[in-house]
Image (cartoon, rainbow, N blue to C red; front, side, top):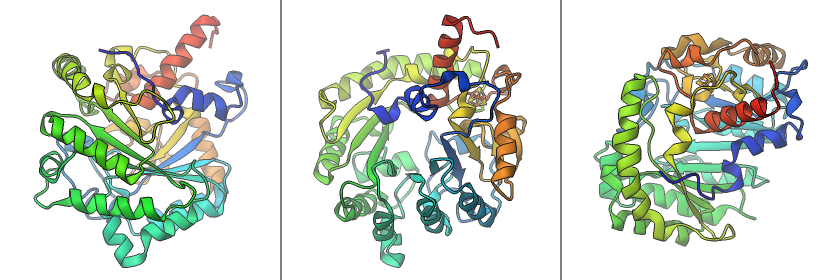
Length: 379
Ligand code: SF4
């Protein structure tokens, strides 16, 4: 497998953490409480279902899902945090934020407090919500920085492959592209940033698919397009994850790399910046560090209203990583952040339950471990 390729700076997670800590890595497991860079909120879909798609690689296929109406509390929390956690991210392990009726209000509150928002969505409802309530127009009006971003998991280059990948019968692909077109037209000064992500698998790996999505991204003026290979589901037994690593990430990975190579950007000024995030960034055999420093980067609220140690374990399937129920106010959240920045917490307690770090937490934890060893820092 190829080592990591020129990912743009917003995907260099340890660097982002370093910037958040203003270069002072001694803050990690130091004496004082450090607020994380971001709070991620997994909204509970429309309270009946978490997502409107059925992707073959979705974590929701094996993780247990509970949906709890905790949005009023989340709104008060965002208000009370008042921008002191600089990023509020709306995304989800298995949930689609556009299904949730509180999303726009939460983004409004986020911007009112001076924080930045991130939105990870499948994009299916963008156009419909614009028609009904001017969602896209309002989003573009609210955004005042290219630190705000919308990331669309497009995962296909044609309506046919999109239906197969997403497990749907309707042509959502064309509707998503229409929504994106409106978004691209309405944003002024390039705010919010528009990112596309494309998980390559059997169903969407034809030359035509790749060529078509690259041409759409160029035509619409998308900022970046990331290709990567889906994870084996979190919660799978590690022997299954290793089998997947050999069969798909290594063998198929080479085939996919060859396919996308001619489309990748050569200069980071190119727009869209097209890059490949190699599966080495999700390697299960790298998960052998002593501490979890991800708590300085993010804390996560799951669809069940519980606050979890990290995004990839924010499901009742990983109850051991619950820090507490969503608190009433910022002081309550600070208590949970403190609990999360626990030096005695052993990552092995995750791995033995089938939990794994995602790319972000793996990058942070491996970099921190290297630094700790290099400095012979005993914690
Ligand atoms: S899975 Fe990884 S990021 Fe999540 S709590 Fe465990 S060690 Fe930390």
